[in-house]
Length: 264
Image (cartoon, rainbow, N blue to C red):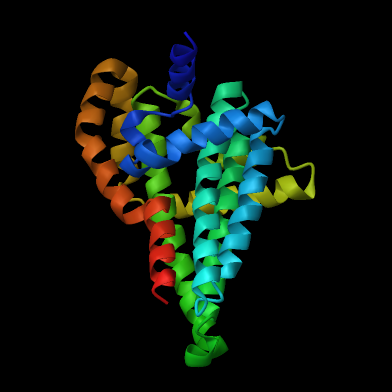
């Protein structure tokens, strides 16, 4: 009975097997689930888990500045891996406790960016004697731009997949005009989150590989016959998500940073 409840909770903590990367299913989700259960038991809410992950990830990223020290680089790499597990755990904890909100999802995305910025900046500025400040800044901006574009495209199609597969319509972003109209911007922090989300959504619209006319056709077909459209959509687009994960997934980018840093 205990094992049955444990595995039922684990299944509940996963979005949808079809949008999960193999790396996540084999590594991040099982360990993230353990973190989620433990930290929830200790009274840490999902946002608290996200902030803990940010702290651990930023510390790990900063340590990549000292790539001439294997101890520093290995410690930084380990902390980045743990931060990735906590990034998985916060969403799993939210689903387990029913505290999954759009604001929490937006904050999670901002935290991911902060961790990656720390890792890219520290790792690149290790080479300041070779590339100079201007060169490191140029490389960092280029890396960050490519990372952001890849990430927003991948997240767009994951959200769309969850929406059209009937799994979780909340994962699909609202239209920008609706977001501007309904988003609570009563505090400075919320204004910052709103700015980040709108910028991210504009990038998704700009760089996605599907025109608006096709999306409108999808919407019409989904409204007419949701079950039939969902079946067809999953059949055609599941392989696409696998390929996107290999190019744009946060795991491939995080692990690439770790591997190349370990080799200096």
